[in-house]
Image 1 (cartoon, rainbow, N blue to C red):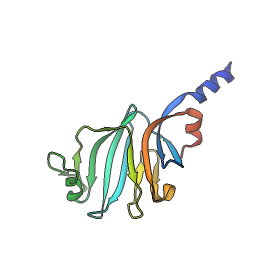
Image 2: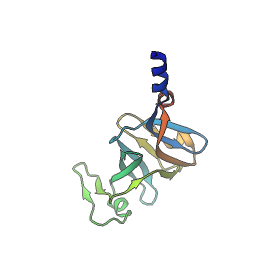
Image 3: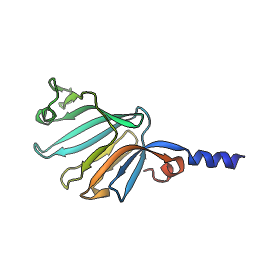
Length: 149
């Protein structure tokens, strides 16, 4: 009976963050309410940008964007004015926007990274110059443990 229960538990789908280019997939834990940051070097102003998300169910919700250059915040063309944090970064809260997935093109100079409080991945070394889809997915618990960082 214990063996059967263990098998069921290992096969039970759990939510994860899946990053895939269609050939390779990285699966990492992302719990309900957990934060996620997609960071990159913005090519127009050549500055870092931090897009901050949170997982809600099967979507990721964009909360705010931060950068040391106000122009990279204004680039989003949202209503309102950016504010500055004590550390000097500019930020702006995002209008409501839930995303079933993010699709990003990996660029050689983009310095693209996906980070949570538990893990972080630089995308270029993993996927090369490619298009990557990032989304909340369901995987068997056993698979999520095997593929975790």
